[in-house]
Image 1 (cartoon, rainbow, N blue to C red):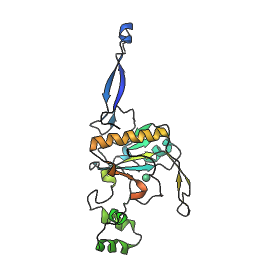
Image 2 (cartoon, rainbow, N blue to C red; image 1 turned 180 degrees about the vertical axis):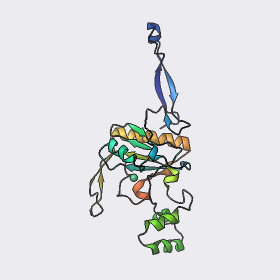
Image 3 (cartoon, rainbow, N blue to C red; image 1 turned 90 degrees about the vertical axis):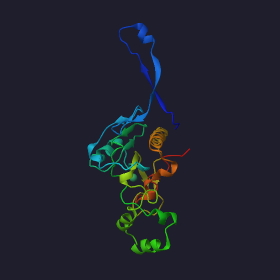
Image 4 (spheres, helix red, strand yellow; image 1 turned 90 degrees about the horizontal axis):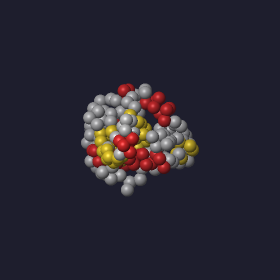
Length: 232
Ligand SMILES: [Zn+2]
């Protein structure tokens, strides 16, 4: 996505003059994020869901990629009405729904893992401390949340979420032994995800290092956020 992404609109749609009608011309309309925190001129379907919009957004400093784990965008939007969900939903046909303002954070990440444990960069005493807790997502999350991004993974308060309509099709349960398999994104979904990411990168100065897959940073089924975006 280039920084000069444009969308074309027709103008001069007079109904009174044949001449005016033949003089339609294309003008460039710039994609931007409005003062209300909603993307303008990108062809997105703006569908605010009040229950999703929590407190003020810090940044945003990162993007988290998700799959809805459901068959339809409608089921995902219905579930968003309960207040758990995020800013963008990408339907199978590539339609993008923006459901929350980028000025507000949403509940889409949950508890975060320890980034330095995953990266193998924690100091020895911290490694001992975290290892000593065993399986304790709450303790780890509370330990991590006082760090500043990007020393920790992004949290609800400082990240934008993108949900792609896609189901897990095999080995989806916690007791399944095999690697979980997910529906791949459609070409239209991949294109729309790239568009959203491009807009956010440009607007907020984010880089490829700020794009995270949900299951890698939190406690989700493996592969949930994989294969949705190819960095150029
Ligand atoms: Zn997710």
